[in-house]
Length: 194
Image 1 (cartoon, one colour):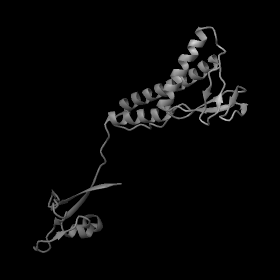
Image 2 (image 1 turned 180 degrees about the vertical axis):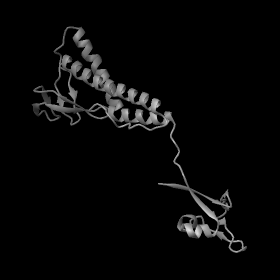
Image 3 (image 1 turned 135 degrees about the vertical axis):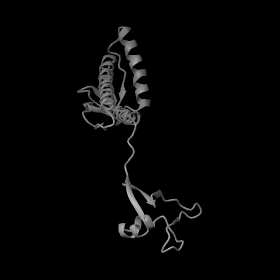
Image 4 (image 1 turned 120 degrees about the vertical axis):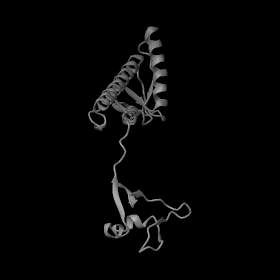
């Protein structure tokens, strides 16, 4: 939306605090007008009162604000569900029904990521203890419990970490580009890894 500034006699128009009206005299008679008149009147009407309308350029965001937008996009993408193909690995629902897991979505909100870190600790313990085939189920977004082994858990979490790293590095590269291009605003949506 375009913003405008209005001047009268070369000075910014001031408005009465009690009702927001402004003074623009008609043929020497003190006349008060509502603020809305400035946008309702056409150029000819404003000119008749000596009012000049000028377009106010939109403020240029700071480079920090632009980089914060890139960080927000990175965080949004990091929190999106992570798709992984578990192939023929058995999956159970809460009723005990069984299917081949196939492609499942794993939730990646911050609280989910903390849960994955805890599961990673359990998987590492199992592998180091010589029990890499220990079943450590991973719960998918659709509530199927995929019967993953400790080694599978580590493989899935490694893929999640790689995706997160790709997003982190791409966001960092975009911020570097934004800093170099400033005050030009770069396309912060370009080139993100899928």
